[in-house]
Length: 110
Image (cartoon, rainbow, N blue to C red):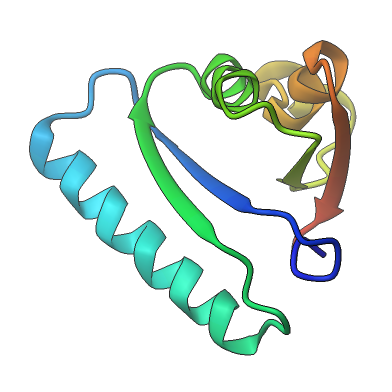
């Protein structure tokens, strides 16, 4: 989508708030690998920046969106419903409610 509209992609991975340096290095390597796979299959190959942070996922995602002046956040969702969602919480739901820009949710594979 970014390639079609001349945009940039900011890929954000949020690690646990107490993640140590080794976990952050692993997370960055994993994110770079995932971004590379997506870029190889995407048309246009827009400029991409990878960001790995430790913290609370909704706030970290929203912070990155604000910092990079995002026009759109694309976020995956597991599609949990009812009691399970209430117990676990939904990062996507919080991002949708609190974001200052448009949010596109994508239902991931089961």
